[in-house]
Length: 240
Image 1 (cartoon, rainbow, N blue to C red):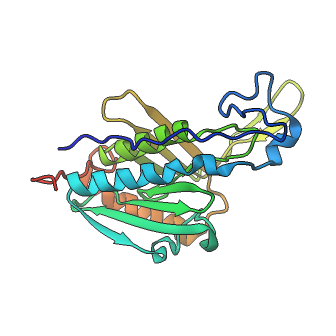
Image 2: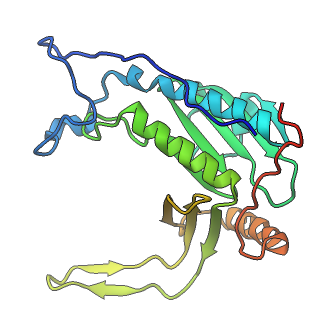
């Protein structure tokens, strides 16, 4: 099996109106200014993410038993999909193993990359891109690579939780909080345990038919996976 190597990318320099170098990734020592939350500038700094996604796809094609499909039609019916006019390319890799999750890479003209897997997992790289978030492509590439390799190693677990009676709490100021009674949860962990993440989102407004589809998919997965996780991808007998 060949080793994945992130493609190199030369430095891209951006300057402000006064000609001063913008040091993305460490701009705000005392917190971002209020107007930076609604400002998007110099988004081309994320362009290298396209090359990273392309390198990941090439690596997976060369080392795993998968079927590859391309075309914008692959995004039809996706939850949280980018707008059609923002999508420049979509590539889906489907492993030749029951219980292993496909991966769908969606390239956008933001520029950025979305990754879809499992039943409802989705990740955006960059997550936001506004000036306040001060993201850089290198850390977003780290996340994209981590998520990709965790998923193909069998590190993705999903669940539809609830409905249960909502949890109502009140703080010392009388502020009442009503906890989620129905949620979608994901947990992702790398093969060596060095990376772990997860999320849980409110599913109260998700259509019943969609939730039923999610549950049916996860029930079928449970028949082949004792832990309920998506299984590791099958490696190619002879890497291409």
